[in-house]
Image (cartoon, rainbow, N blue to C red; front, side):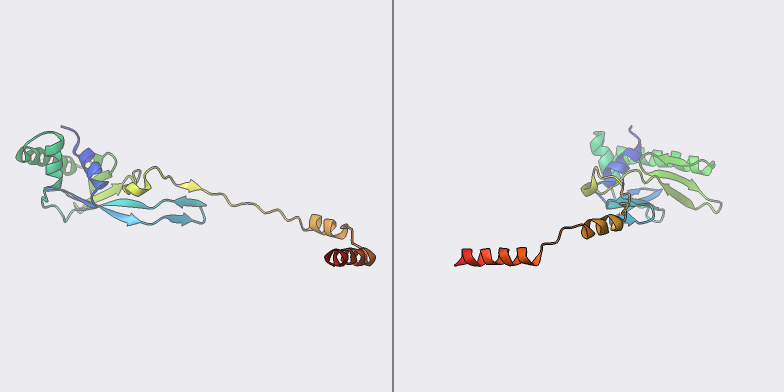
Length: 175
């Protein structure tokens, strides 16, 4: 059987919530594009992942996906997920952390509450596929005021007679 975390990752691209029966739910939240002024970075819009241990009742989404992908009856797929969850709880109870590739790490804190540390390597917003955070360094403006003053001071000025003759020529041409 493929790792359950692969199915969860696939589903999070299409759904906002994926429930792992008996463990909890991964939920994605939309984050708009961000500009980090101090880091000079522009980040694309994304969907960040979080974990909620309170949502643990089976909604059938993950089980149905496993059943379809592995060509299994629904009940067999559900049993495989239950066994996987049982192994994960054994790891957590023994003080280990669970690494879910593409999602993050889960461990129990001192008070035996589930803590989730997201990887944040994947952007679950399909509209932002392929977009990366870019660094936009500020443009350095060099003052050239002395150079500009020099050019302005040495610009040849037309004499008044040149201006009058040019004006007369245009007037004659108009007539």
